[in-house]
Image 1 (cartoon, rainbow, N blue to C red):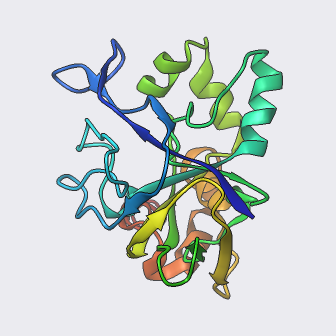
Image 2 (image 1 turned 45 degrees about the vertical axis):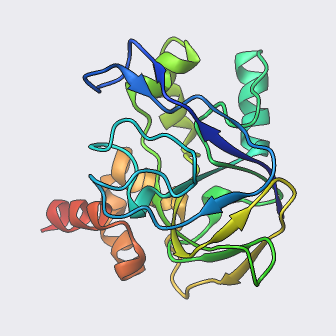
Length: 221
């Protein structure tokens, strides 16, 4: 299990973003050399957990629960075949393009040590990616949001437990796996298409993104 690339984005204009200046950081490209990773701060004020990575819409993106976004190269390969076009690492806006990791089977609260134990960060799986119109506009695919949601493989957001540096080729080791069975995929399904599953995701406890937990509590009250 390792990183194929570490991707960061610079602000660029888009007609599909909700920001007043029309800027988005979704255009992420593989970085050369090490990239510092640290907790960015609370949602609404903190951006990306990766140094040099732009988050232009702090109202909807970034913060501690969306500090690092991981997506599997194997899933990008699936979409390459489906869309019949080349999809380079980072094109889905992911910070970490992984290989050998079943990202959507990861459990909420699962912890990954990336790179060397003494210099690599400790990351914790905490949330899912909900596709937005910026994502659809960026890919220029008709009906993209519906197709992505039907696939139910969103990739995972991770919070930064311990800071460090990451680079392409780093090994990813699962150093903690919680006792519940609340996976990234289960959270995505419950919040998007199968609300009857919502009570079950509460088993993840405090490790679950607070917004997802509040939604589950509200809808099951």
